[in-house]
Structures are given as structure tokens and as C-alpha cells.
Image 1: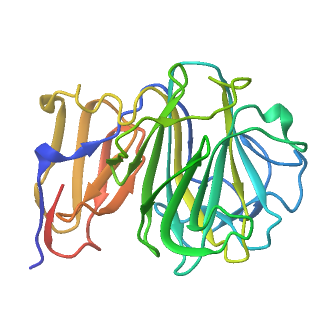
Image 2 (image 1 turned 180 degrees about the vertical axis):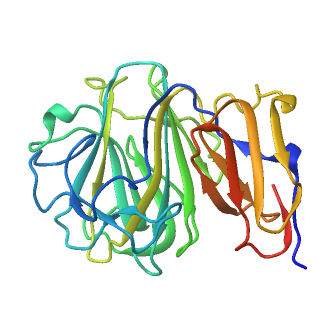
Amino acid sequence: MKKIYFLAGALIFGLTANAQMTDGFEDYPLGPYFGGHWTNWSMADGPENIIVTDERASEGTQSGFIGNDQIQDAILDTSMKTGGMWTFTMDFFIDFGSSGYFNAQHDLGALGSTGNWAYQSYIGILPTAGNEADPGTFHFVTAGTDYNFSYVEEEWIAFAIEHDLDMNIVRLFMNGTEITFGVDIPFGDDPTFQGKLNGFDFYSAAPINFMWIDNIQFYEGEFNMGVSDMDVTDISVYPTVAKDLVNVSSKSNINNIAVFNTSGQQVLRLNPNSVDAQINVSALPAGVYM
């Protein structure tokens, strides 16, 4: 009989008590979507909209898609933030040999004209005029510097950016691990907009752009804020040897549950938004998970 072993003491909880926004695309109709916190560069319903699809998803059945028409230019409006610490997290998926792109905007009031980019993320393409293919490399460009690192194609990647708007720096995380370069990464270099964050722009930047996004969160505080403050006596995980379902209960609200294999790869993610949750592990191969 297949057995799945959970290291309950290492179960990773992302508790974001000050969440401003969560979006898993589950409540939207399929097709182009305009409304709520989703707008676009022209700020009018049209071909620039995010596309809601059920082709693939990191969790649930739906995700957001930016294709290769070089027209789509969807904006996630976070509302204006002018100081403090703010964290943005999402899961993204890039097809083999394909690309994705997004940037942070200081002030959405400039949309449709010049915009004001805090940083730009070129995923699988070079940050050049021609946006030539560069498979498996993520280029995070800010203040004239390209901070680049590798990612895995055709796999959901959990990505997070922590914005310290008071210090004008950011920290990057991939699959729960911080990506470091030995120096502080600036949030932007324009003193006119320093300390301002108003949204994120997902653009069809290249003919090879095929990018899916899911499990978006935007909240006040550091990345994984509150994880180390949880007392393990407040969490119950059972059974720790399972075949189908694992139950999780907590004295505090559980916003996120992430399940990792022993190689550090995220294999499941849930957003229960409850004090009780069930993890369906029936599709996982036998092994040890955290």
C-alpha cells in the first residue's frame, strides 16, 4: 500500500494576517477579464485584458494568462502604497522555450502615457530592444542593473518580492528561498516616485510570450510574515502517515499551506482561509513531504 509521510513539525504555513489582496482566478468567468483589481494599460475593457483560462493552474482549475500577441497589457491595481513593507507573491508557469514579463509601477496615474517603472522582470528573454530568447533565465532589471538567475521551465514557480518602500530596496524569493547577490537590490532609481508602489503590469513583451500566473497575494509585512511566530502547539496535522487525506487545524486562520518534497520542490498549495483544512495527497507518489 502506498504511504505518504508528513514531517508535521516542518509543515510550512504562510500566514498573512494583513493580507490586502488574494487572487486565484477561481471566481472569474473564462476569457478576457476586466474589473475588480484588474485593469489594463489603456484602462478600458479591451484586448489588453488578462485572460482567465482553465488550461492549467497551480491550484484549483483556473489561472491568468498572458499570450504572445504583444497586445495584452494587464494591470493588477494594488492601490497606492507610500511607505512600509509590502510583499507580492505569485506562482508562474512558462512553457518550454517561451517567455513572460511583468513590471512594478510606481503610480498608475501615468498609465496610457509614459508609465513609471520601478523594476522590470524579463523571464526567458533578454532585456534588450529585440527581447531575444534566453530560456531558463530570469532577468530582474532595476536602476540600470540586471540581476539574473535561473528558473525551471514547464514547472510552477512560487515567486515573491518583498518591497521595503522606506529603504527603497527589494528582496527576491523563489520557492521559499531568498535569491541574493551580495548587495541590496534597489526598488527603483527615480527620486520623483521613490517610496511609491501602485501596481504590477503583465505585458505580452515578445512573440514567444506564454505565461500563466496563479495564487497571487499582496500583503503588508515581510515575506512569510508570522511563520516563525507560530507555536507548534497551535497546529495539528494528522495523520502523519497518509494515503489520501491529511487534516490540518490551527487556533489561527490558515491562509496558505504549501507542501514540499525532499528536493525542496513545491508539489501542492492550498488557500483554505479557515482554521481547518484537508490536503488531498492521493495523487502524490509515496515518499516524505514537508
